[in-house]
Length: 458
Image (cartoon, rainbow, N blue to C red):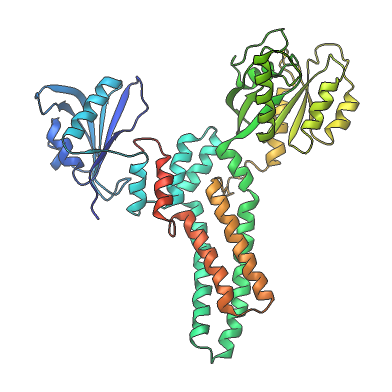
C-alpha cells in the first residue's frame, strides 16, 4: 500500500546553527521542487545536496535560504523518497518552511512515524526500531554502544537463529504427525526436540543472565542518597555531578525536596536522587520531603548511605540500617578530614558485607573508590566485554522470559513422554514470543504503542 507524504521538524526546538524539515513519501521530491528556487530537484541525482531558496507559493516571496538534500527510494531510511530542508536555526524560520510544506500537500508526521515506515517497509525490524530511540536517549558511551549493536541487527540475528532452529523442529514434528507409520521418524523427532529445546534454552539463559546489566545501561540505576541531615549527602551529589545542583549549607534539613540528576559513573548511568534527610520533624514542608524520601528508598536500585566520620552512630543511623536491610547499598563514611568519633568496626558489622567507602568530599578523597564500588557491584568487572550482546529493553526481557518458560514446559513434557503434538504447542509458543521481539508476530496495536513513544520527526 502506497503511503502519503509526511513532514516534520527533525531537530530540537530552539536556536541553533541549523534546523531541518524532513519529508518522506511518494510526493516528497515533487513538493520540495514546487517551492524551491535553484536546481530542478525532480531531475537531480539521488543523495545530493543543493543550495537555493524556499518560496512562499501564495506571495511568491523568499521565505528562507536553504540547503536541500534529496535521497531517492529505496536507498533511504524509510525506503521512500526523502527530502531534508536545512534551514537557519530558529523557531520562526523552520516553522515557516514547515507550514509551506504542509500547505503544498504533506501531512504532519506522527511521533516516530519515519522510523515506523522504515519498519513497515522492511528496512529494519522492531528491535532495531526501538534501538533508534535508545540511541537518542543514551546517557553514556556504553549505553550508546549497546543501542548501536542492537540497531545494527546483532540481537535480531540471534533471535532469527533461535526461531529458525525451532521452526525446523516444528516442521520435523509435522512430518511425524502426517506420516505416523514411520517409527524411526517418531524416535528421531523426540531426540531432535530434546536437543533443540535444550540448545535454545541455554542460549536464552545466557542472554537473560546479562539482561539486568543491559537494562541498567539503557535506563540507568535509580540511586538514592540517604543519611541523617548534614552528613554530606548534597556534597556527594555535587561531587558526582561536578556542578552545584543541590544547595549545601551548614543548617540541618536544608534539602526540602527531591533533586534528580543523571551522572556517568564508569560508563554506568546513575539517576541520582538527593533526598531530604530522613528524621522525625515538626516542620510541615520538611515532613513532606521526608515522606517522599522514604518512597524513593523503596524504589531505588542502589542506595548510597552517608555517615559522618566525626559523629557517633545514632539511633537514627541504626533505623536507616534497618530500613535498607535486604537492599543493594554502599556505605559512605564522609568527613574523614575531621577527628574520628564513628565506630568503624560497628559500621562494618551493620553493613553485612556491603562495601564501606571512606571519603572526604571537601578534600575530594575517596570518590574514585566509590565509583569503582558502584561499577563492581552491578557489573563485577564484565562491563567492557565488547563481544557481549546486552538485552536492555524491558519488553524484550519479558518476552525472553516467556519464551524460556515455554521451552521449560516443553522440556518437562518431553521428560514425561507426552505426545509430540502436545509438546509442539509450547515450542510454537516460544517461536511466537521470540517473533514479537523483532515484530514478526507483533500486533498492530503494540506497534502503534511503541512508535507513539518516539520523538516527533524521528
